[in-house]
Length: 146
Image (tube, rainbow, N blue to C red; front, side):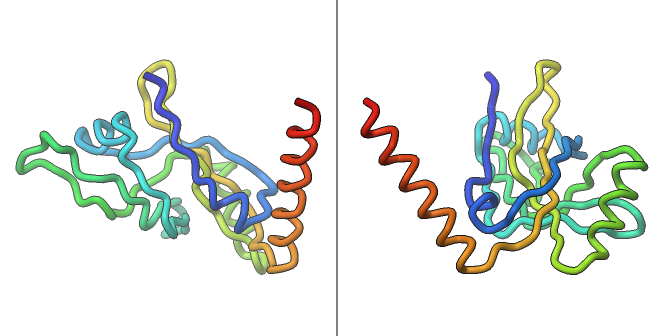
């Protein structure tokens, strides 16, 4: 039952320098949707507000058996990190070009939903071409070795 959902486009769009594991403040119907792998990372990002870290535009689909207590799919969710990690991230964000991007969501052994966030800089077009070229050469090497 280990649901692990990855943001595949994040590694293509950003050069990830540092990774952190954070808890999320969720409602009951949100955790049920995550367990059912009903999450979309399209254009999601993290930002600071009053010293707290939030994730925005992370789409967690409404739970199919939810009643009036169902959640808003695009609501902002608070991320839980230590104060030292928050301060470190906030200082890095003030530097030009850095962003905090959700990389994956997973369920721990204790049935808690965690999110892995990455601190990264946006890639330029030539960097993306380099990534594509590297991926294709790796694929050719694997194909040749089989």
